[in-house]
Length: 307
Image 1 (cartoon, rainbow, N blue to C red):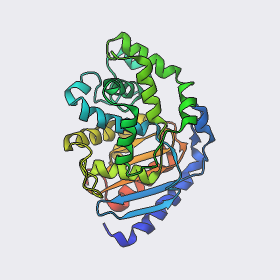
Image 2 (cartoon, rainbow, N blue to C red):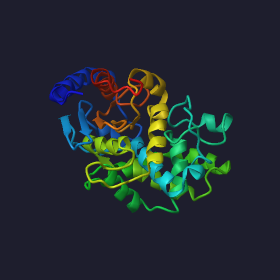
Image 3 (tube, rainbow, N blue to C red):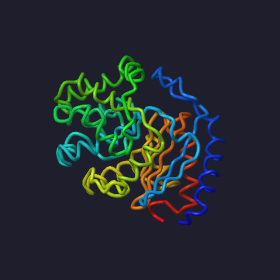
């Protein structure tokens, strides 16, 4: 990878992404998210030697939303262990929308994977009696190398008062014996984690820790085991982009997780972390500009996992 032309490649990637923005829409089912600027777009690339490349709105804060599922899964695997976590949630793509309840009722007793809402709520239920929100917040700050991460209370309350579907999912999981803890506390923890304010640069740092198999290369601190990082990146590759995960894996081939707040976190094994922010979403709930950006970067920098 030639560092001298990375800035030029990133700038071109941003232009490609901007052309896609009019085709997407900002999420409005959580009322507070609908206030985001549809034309905002930022791209950050962090290398293991400490070099950071930024173009666009990389320091604009937005809520992490479903990317928090990555952080919670990392913590759950560290605190409860692989066997315990995957006894209540699977590892397979669901073939349904991220907030679907259908597969739980007719196809499977436990959620298909931790990257859909039912799986993430289940993951939170495994740690809610072991880890406080404050501890998860501190963990998020360390993973993102960003002490400025905080709870966005406006989004939190907006989300908490419009999450009837998530509560229905939790009650169904409780009826099947998958969730055995208090439903309200599990939903509150899940919603708080979704409501953390982050930046594209912070997401690039999170991805870099995963890509470096759990160690922050900038500080030398180990934040998760190599096994946890490997498991999480594997699930990101197969399930991280909702209904578009298969096509994304073929075209881009980088373990990536999206959030309806507009974020994308992409971990290139042993090489770099990439963070994107763009609140205009495609039909699957993924950052529409970011998908094109990552496809271009994958092609130009040879980042596909099978290259």
